[in-house]
Length: 48
Image (tube, rainbow, N blue to C red; front, top):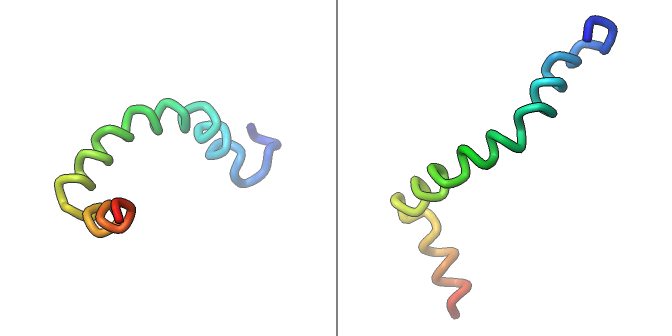
């Protein structure tokens, strides 16, 4: 870590946590986006 450059610790945390965080945050983010109606225009376009 200490000899790994300026982003070594950030890279370590990213590599160790990104998959877990993606799983944990996916559902709340998808639900929040759905509640705002932000996806409606896209969904309407896809349904055509």
